[in-house]
Structure formats: structure tokens, C-alpha cells
Amino acid sequence: MDTNHNNLHVFKILFIIKGILSILLSFLPVIYFFIGTWMVTSQVSNDEHAGIAGGIMMVVGGFIFLFLLALGIVTILAGKYIGEQRRYTFVLVVAIVNCITGILGILLGIFSIIELNKPEVRKLFGKNA
Image 1 (tube, rainbow, N blue to C red):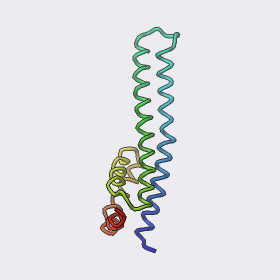
Image 2 (cartoon, helix red, strand yellow):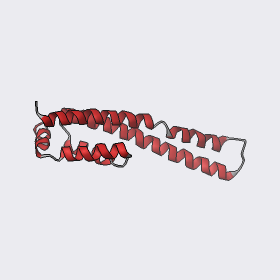
Image 3 (spheres, helix red, strand yellow):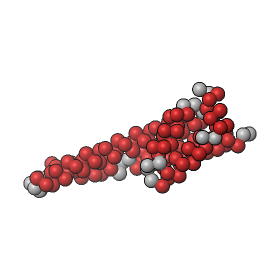
Image 4 (cartoon, rainbow, N blue to C red):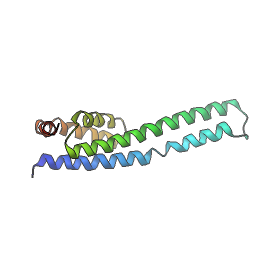
């Protein structure tokens, strides 16, 4: 069995795990969204600054939720495509985007970029194009 295929199999599993973790962590900003909603709709505080702060919390929480959810979905898709050895550019772009998501994303992104740029791996993706 080819060792490069083994590396791609490992990266497939790691991308799927990272995608699932991103989807699970995407639900943490929902807390900020609901706190912001409570601040906007609450009758306890009629302070307009609390309403503005609540609106900002809603927007930021919603944006981070959608970003992490989308990142998790495309990371899982990239793992699927690594296993199928197709869509090289998509997998490379997802690896680069994962580099902005903390230490796990940085490590996964850098090592997968190194692996994807090997000539024999490019040939594997090229055969299945």
C-alpha cells in the first residue's frame, strides 16, 4: 500500500473530525445571540445603550455561528474529497481557510498544505479529475 495514500487517509479523518468540532463549537455563539436578544427585548432595562449592545451581540453571535457552521460543512466536504482524491483546489482552499481557526486549524492546514503540494499527491488528484 502506498504511504501517500495512508497520509491522505489520515488527513481525510482529521478533516472530518475538525469539521464536526467546528459544527459543535458553532453553537457557542448562539448563547451571545440569545443574550443580545434578551437585552434588546427586556423590559428590565429601558437603557438605549443596552439595546445597542444587545443588537451588536446578536449580529456578532449570528455571524460567528454562520461562519463556523459553514466552515464545518466545507471542512467535512474537503475530507470527503480527500478520500475520493478529487477537487484538489477546493481541498487546498479549505486547508488555507482552516489556518485562521485556532491551533488545531493551523496545524491541520499547514500539514495538509505540505502534503497536498507533493508531486505524487497532485498526480493522484490529477488522475481522478
